Length: 118
Image (cartoon, rainbow, N blue to C red; front, side, top):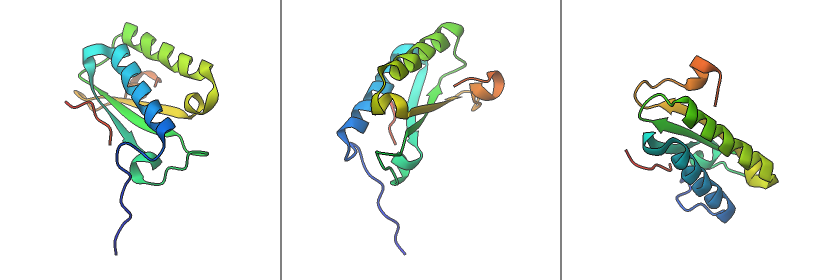
């Protein structure tokens, strides 16, 4: 039995590519040198993405725990995406993990394959 190939990069959807690139740039600007990588998961990474219904799921890995200022910048980034309306703003969702501890800030504080390297 063979499994279907996962889509590569760029994806077949230019608007999805632009959204992922905007997220990568925005998160990178928000957390600076702390960013280890952004990793796609969910339907886009597994080949089941359907633009009218799917969202873009990713995890961001940082070199350590983010400070208040970085979290505020991430919150502002999220608010800006949301305020824009449209498919990209409505469809972006995210999870974050610390590469150092492997823990999610949301687990500790109740908050929120494309890699930057690391």
